Length: 249
Image (tube, rainbow, N blue to C red; front, side, top):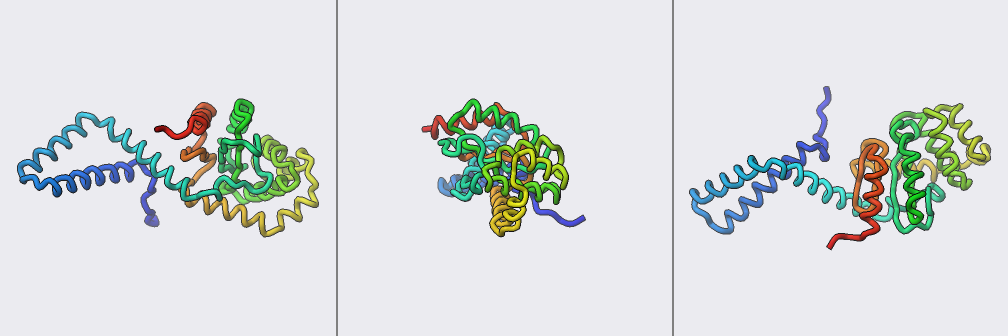
């Protein structure tokens, strides 16, 4: 079996970082305050006992550290993350709150999230949903993603998006059926799909996903929050509400 690097988002890796931070912070404080060996040992014992008696602080610290790291990653992506491929938007294209979804047409969880996103759009007139095609599950899902971008060029993105998920797993026949149902000009779509900008968009989305350490779909970004998986409508609405409320003071 080939060696694999530790997943930087693994709970055990994060836990190790927390322990290192605690030890490092304690060591720096001890060095600065020039404690005697006896005093150092006493303080270390206090910290050890506190952690053992209050183990719930570790998951809490892990969660806070993960949120902080996610925020840094999202900020580093900049406007490239929220700037859509022209037309590849659901909801209000001029909305003041932006939800980014990384999706794959071969993903069952993505399919299940379609009505949840529709409900969020209905409940939040100021919501702009930027769809980033991330076809990582099959060659057919990559072809469906190309047709999706071609649909965006024809202002048929939402219609194709819904029709493609409703058609089932992507295949040559289901993709064409979804395009026809969406009212697309198929010949025009085939020309757009062959344009370099379509492949460039898919590569851009993959690069963004790698930068954000996204390895599955659906994945969501709103504000500084990065949410992985089928988190559900309520979690997404809470994240939307947090953005609307603004940063905590």
